[in-house]
Length: 306
Image (cartoon, rainbow, N blue to C red; front, side, top):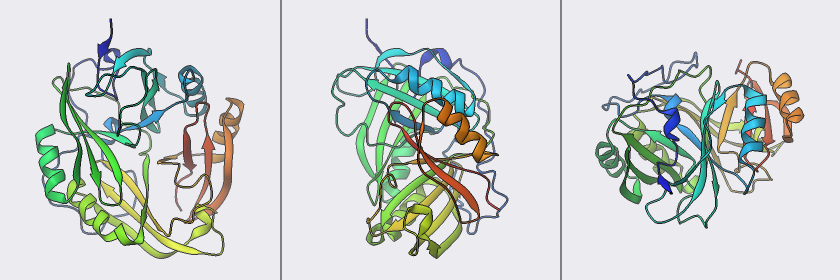
């Protein structure tokens, strides 16, 4: 019997309990112009990276991820996670650096699923949809019900897709050791509209805005780009404003993960079957690398900024 469950969740992982809301960011910097709108975010540990792996690679991916970063995972379940008929193996991974929803579709993936980068838990789905519209975002997938809550997909200007979800019974996850970084690439023509909409929706603020950042950090040494760091109750976001002339794998890594010792982390990743595609390289006060895990998931990994 096929069970329908939301895209970011396996029921065994979600016993009902009190919500734990950690600080939105571990950064020591004080953001400028903090948002004043009512907060609809629950906490960064509930904001999952959506990982679509190559067919049959769920076990290899989760094993490599846990060997690299530590953590636990739920048992894989076969579920329908879209409002139209589909079937995928789904598994939730908890790690100190971020929470991941892992999908291995057995059927073709219905549009536009697969293009959303994250799933964000909100305090109310209707409130989230209203906030999205008021902020200038689009409702890409209208709200739909599942057995334990409701879901929708929104799109910010610049083509950045995010899934929103809400549960009838609140989940309770441990706070993260470090807050993952949502890595967003936008064209210059969309940058202002994206920032206005994204900050209005998230209640976020600008931590830094460097219009002449070293583009060596995105594979373009000798050039510059605009690098914007944001903080909000949903976590951290790094915005790269570029002309789209990006060498592989840049733009494929939708999330960055902070670790204490990058060299040791890369050693564990390689031993677990991951491939270092770029780096490590120092830029913007930190060492960074881009890694491809079994199953095809590409992630940026960095140490703490000076």
